[in-house]
Length: 172
Ligand SMILES: [Fe+2]
Ligand SMILES: [Fe+2]
View (cartoon, rainbow, N blue to C red):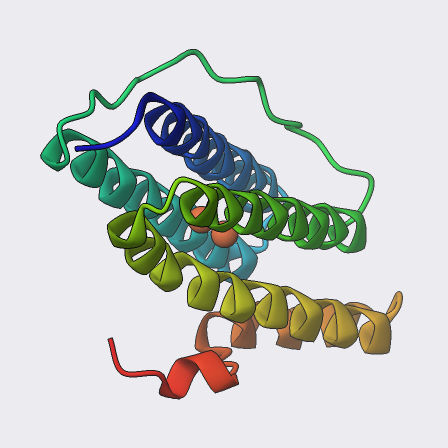
């Protein structure tokens, strides 16, 4: 059984994951109308993954005797000055999500809720990967600069981008 405190904290993470999904969906749309199909495909995939993160939390809260809340979401940015700015926003957002997960882990320990603490380890590992991926992409964008040919190749290759981190080798 979840404590009210933990239930509330998990519900606010549900909202954050839902908002993440909307943020990346808006990025996918912007990239798609700009003609960058690879970047759009990458963002659609990210958006879907964030929805999966949300659902995993929803199921957990309901299974443990809580009630997962489906709430109103804040509207995401729908336009960006540049691809660089868009990916910088993605990186900043992932750091914000990592901080929120860390806070949740902290609360689970304070409440001595070791099941939730164990459940959250998947998110801790996931955030290491997402931050590493965002940093790798930003490094590539900085290398490309204003080069149109570079952007073309980046758009073609982004869907195949893989980043291996220490978390990747952790068994699920
Ligand atoms: Fe997430
Ligand atoms: Fe994420």
